[in-house]
Length: 395
Ligand SMILES: Nc1nc2c(c(=O)[nH]1)N[C@H]1C(S)=C(S)[C@@H](COP(=O)(O)OP(=O)(O)OC[C@H]3O[C@@H](n4cnc5c(N)ncnc54)[C@H](O)[C@@H]3O)O[C@H]1N2
Ligand code: MOO
Image 1: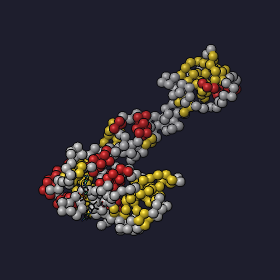
Image 2: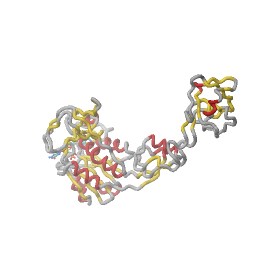
Image 3: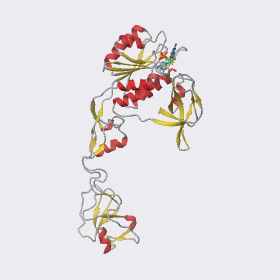
């Protein structure tokens, strides 16, 4: 059995190198940007008025506090120009600053009567106040967004303002999610007493959906001949296959052997961790990457989070951030395995703090929905003390 660290580096070494494609801006959220986004014009593109009020020349204040209003400059109107330096133009937020003016005084600081604006006593005036100056956010041609970033809603906004309607992103792999086991029935069916509902495949599909991947779901029978036939077709049609179950020592755990018979190279089978010990990972050349997650629901999900997700992010050129949290209470774990402890997180004394979450083991799917994160406790130790910091993976 290999360590968690060794397993993770083997998984990451076997990343894929996806092509790029262009998608509509409306579909780009959550995808990874494959090319930098440049400013097609200055940001803002003109001196933008930031308060409703009047625009005038600041130097005019040495001569007068009373300004005849020449006209109104609203947002969306082409720039006008102040003809008399002792006059003003009414301006609205978002308008282009009129030519021959250099300051804005909000309505609250002046009185307007009979077409004349008079500054109130104490109205503060300095050049370029309440003006968002052209090009101060970014200049034309500047990089607004670096490539290899996961596209957030703010980034969608930036791209829209740079005039983009299509975005270059890394192509997502075609993923199949396969449950295994004759005890499983679809969630909509009525289970007999000896049956359970297939939850893992739905859980994995939901996790993939948050990455923008619409996986296809399959179910493999425990029957060796049937499983073999299904695998042949899956290996033909998918770049990535996530299996859950059929990877431990049982008489019907045919998956690792059948995959290898079908030409899959075993990269590893078995990781010194709990949960998720019988985890299998293999490749079929560059054509297909296979993750055989152990069937217990918490094991499946743990392996997805700790190995598949970093693999996906590395393949898509972006990184998944690691965090540490403070263990709130003593925890003992004797086996010589990395323990991925299900925890609840809170902020205590300004520190991210983790408390073990009640659960009854890797078959306890209900606990997974109560937990916030997995805290990885190193295999070399068996007692972990309150106040120590360890890495956490958010769920
Ligand atoms: N003799 C040994 N037995 C087991 C070992 C071992 O080392 N020696 N390892 C144990 C560990 S650890 C795990 S984890 C499990 C994993 O076994 P499999 O990957 O072969 O998974 P299954 O036996 O098919 O299923 C385990 C468990 O999970 C339920 N399951 C499976 N798929 C789903 C699904 N899609 N949705 C909901 N629940 C699912 C299944 O019904 C079983 O209860 O092996 C231990 N045994
Ligand atoms: O490792 Mo198994 O994944 O404990 O339940």
